[in-house]
Image (cartoon, rainbow, N blue to C red; front, side):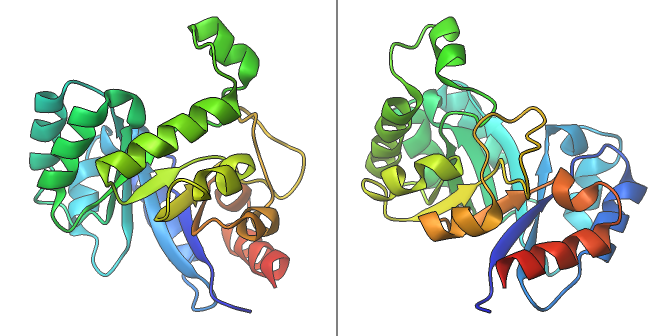
Length: 223
């Protein structure tokens, strides 16, 4: 089996839980990184915990979305953390994306396309007149223009994105079966890799229940 790249979503506000997730997902069969989102980063001690992690690939999923000066100040405030990947909404616009990329140095900037919790009906309610595929393709073109390092999109849009964006593609909304929870555009790990993603983001299918056994299930699924 070729090595696969997986970000484990550390979706908790408890340090003890984060430690357990990291401890129980140690393996040399696949490459593991850890995604920390808003819940953990803003929790008591969350930022300090991240700052003390060593020899880990850290994906900070803050989904920045603001005017250029604000997102620029935000990324400057993160310089004391050893972050490998940082997310920003592509909806922030070209100026914000370029400013972020210029300031990022060794940190990879990841553009968030359309959230996997949204479908065509949701987009219409928000006010978009494009369907999911059309909007994601448009966002991927913007990411290329901004010269950022990676894109997040659902497994269903990977091939579409790859036509206009030639760097890393990270795919959330990964499920082993039809249980989608709050996600609407999901895909299995094997199908996502077949479509061409570079990293998977997996949370509950790994971290809910017996973590070590769930990780073995993933490895077997990919073999």
